[in-house]
Image 1 (spheres, rainbow, N blue to C red):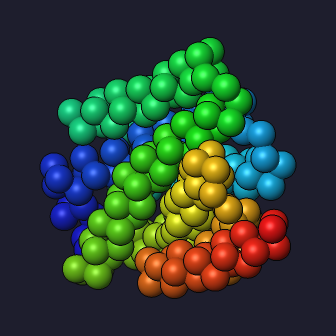
Image 2 (tube, rainbow, N blue to C red; image 1 turned 180 degrees about the horizontal axis):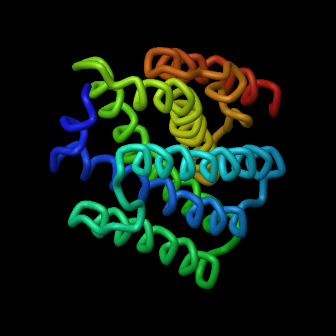
Image 3 (cartoon, one colour; image 1 turned 180 degrees about the vertical axis):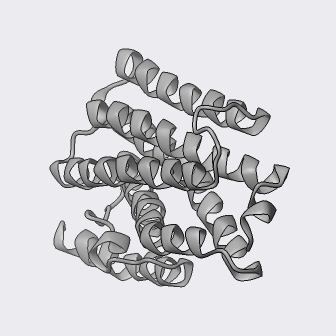
Length: 207
């Protein structure tokens, strides 16, 4: 896609939303790490935090290559920032008011919400890449997409299993999504389906 096409209003707003989502992600992961109890999950989120910092730079570089100001505001960017700030505040509230296990679940839920938007951004950027010549975006998309898949699908698995454990049922931790290193929706669905037999085995072993 030629640069003049990328500089149309909607693609530009998407790129600014993507940048703000990544910047908000840095704050969200930083706050979530104050809530985390599980050593395995802490290791995972520390890795995702560092990757998200890199993603901030990736999108910043795209904007600069297009001759756009990374600090410019768009309506969509403001909304994304508001949502990100709200997720940080939700975790801070959980830290003050909830027990540690509950705060950890809140943090995981907040990450899933943030990563759902992040995942969508990069999916849409991928569609821009397919639609025409967009070498600049393709390079960034190829670098980031698999990491975003991991962030969303793995944390979704963690959130589900932490909730299941809180409900007093056998949880599979670390979740199958992480063990199987899933990177697609199909792989995530298969991993989720496989948890039933693992949970049943854990329940039988606990008798």
